[in-house]
Length: 343
Image (cartoon, rainbow, N blue to C red; front, side, top):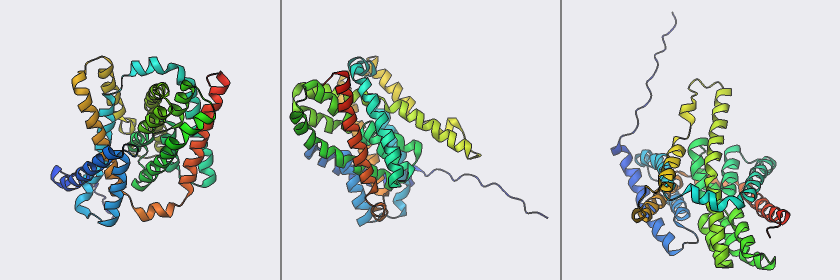
């Protein structure tokens, strides 16, 4: 007689009490990262968060009691941070002022993804890390990596490695771009467009732009905001690709509703409220600070989950991939501007 298989119920979600130790640890480390980010804004709180998280994880090795809260912060709090960012982004303003930069932005994004795919294959970098580095370089650094992480579900050490790689080239760009801009005799708008399309993180774009000139800084910031909005269609495309792959693999629990990045929809709702003027100006700075802190907490949790030895075993190939993609984006931005007569 054949044995009867009794289906097992899914494990219940951890309670708040079970999550509390890990959440508290992530928040405390994030507070330290926030303070360091205020002291060194060029590095920024998010980068300090992931670095401090990695150090705590690999030096003090928090036990299993902390795992539920750390996992919650690295996933759920991450999604909340993206939604909160929507309250500070007026889509109509960005679309109106950034339309003239859209052609250059679209070309550089396409180049970034093609370079990440081709160079990543040549270097034998695994797929999810290729996507993270490609998205981070193409769109907006750590914020873009944070947005796609819940969709493609990479290992925590891959996320940490990608953010660290992107930050490295952000720092190089801040120091190198203004010098190269003067050597190339770029106009204020030409340099602003170059910085806004070829430097990843917003703070680095602002730093490089205003190092060149005020006009370049103003224009670079607008271009960067326009570029940041493209994370929405990128996330939707990635979600559809993940759904298609799961369906092709015949996964019994496949569901488009399950795979759809609902936090992006709520991001659009938040941005729509901001665009409609329904968010009072008096509370917008507080919302911005909350969004910034949430993303620091989330990235700190990712750092707390990262295995430093495993990251080291990955070797130099992801860094070479990041260098190649960043160089391709930087050169393509200048070439497109030259072709359309905007330099």
